[in-house]
Length: 212
Image 1 (cartoon, helix red, strand yellow):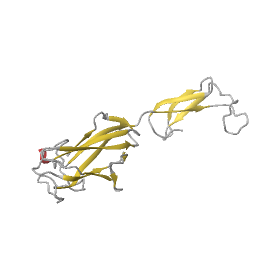
Image 2 (cartoon, helix red, strand yellow; image 1 turned 120 degrees about the horizontal axis):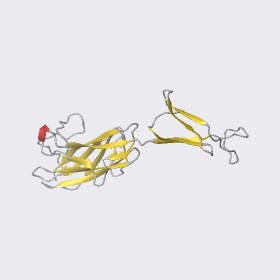
Image 3 (tube, one colour; image 1 turned 135 degrees about the vertical axis):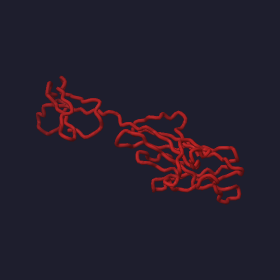
Image 4 (cartoon, helix red, strand yellow; image 1 turned 180 degrees about the vertical axis):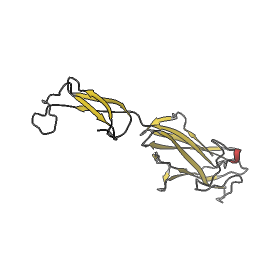
């Protein structure tokens, strides 16, 4: 099995974006197989967003390839996620063959790996390996996606609240040249700025976090 970023999928996305992977199953044996059950291990930072896959509710998703795969042939399926991270970094998504059958419906063994749903018992010899190099169990694979949290902007208005209701009414003017200080979560000054002629201010390109 090989897992890769799908065709056209960029290697770096912003959080909240959709990301697509392609999983390809290789029949390296000498008999046809069918009903190949694939388990995808959903990591923190990815949310399953694919109705073709079954969400098992335990951090995994499943897909059954029912078509017959003849010797030396392959079958591929895509899986789609929505990214959701709290800090920028690399997210690794793994998939594995859980089971497969011959054309008579009998569960078959893999001579060079152990199909199952345990992500912690596989020897990982590298990425995109199908011939057991470096003792890799080739019924599983992983792919990486870089997920970024883009810089944020924070702004508002300083105005003269004539009726003192805490709401900026349409006829209440902004106040020019007021010093606004932005503090980070630790209480340190992050930036300062004076309001514009209309009372507005905007701090730009902030690292996502807590400010006041």
